[in-house]
Image (tube, helix red, strand yellow):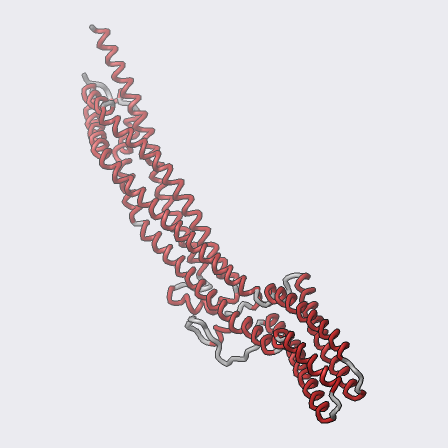
Length: 449
């Protein structure tokens, strides 16, 4: 039975080209997704290069701060006030022994020898105390200015292949300056340390005055010195506690902060690497999904396209029955189920890609921002990054380009999802139309019988 072209469903008329090419479009985008994997790896490689350069520079800064700021402070303390504090008990015993002899010895030569020995010990310790105050001022100035107290003509670069000027520029001056001005509590602690040192100096001055007086007048002084030495021990303990807190929270704080930054950067790099790995696996999953779906669907959609074309050439009931039998048969049902599963998995993959690529974009942007904002690494970063085609001038631009590449990956999959939605809708509508057609034909046949 022939039919006119007016009987051809508008759905078939309007979407003949679409239904015959949609699955091919999905396959083409799936194949194109394969080429997104190298883009993803390229972006991942560049991000790793920047992370590794930053980690190298942080490692160098840690060692610069340790060698040129923290170790000098420890050394200066060890050879000055450290000597006074560490042998406080031995010094007190010796001093009591000498003063006791000074009180009881009558021979002038012996008394003079004892007196000179005592004064020599007291003057030596007094000089160490004065040196420690000077060193304290020098170290504070070094931190505020970012200029080490060690005057090396050639600075160690700690594995950074660069010249002296660039190595010096790596010193984190802002961090060092901040260390000396962190809080009012530390300012009070600093004053407490200085007061303790000055009181120690005053004790030695007082003891020298008392010893000189007793030497000249032969008046007993042992009990007075005992009281003074008790106060001396107490001041040493006060200084030790206060200085430990102060130096930990100021002088050594930059090292703690840099190590913390290094740990955070390593964690960020690990998180970014993981995001790249998961996103790459997701993209591979999309490619595998298209391949597996294709095995089931490609034959059906090829036959469907052929039958639609045949129907449009003849436009008769027989050809439409053939089309209906194909569209309403088991093969069509299996292909439709596969298409719906394909759609559902695409939704999941699209969500995972969006989540992963948004996370990666944040990593890239944060990486670029951190480099731009840390002035202390600018010169060294410029030098180290040249071999990778990255510079301070173009890093933001390159990162933006990388983010666009990542967005294109999502756009491809989103386009695939859109086409698949269209195909699902079209197949569903065509099935409804052909179901109604067969139902009507069956009713007509029943009527004629």
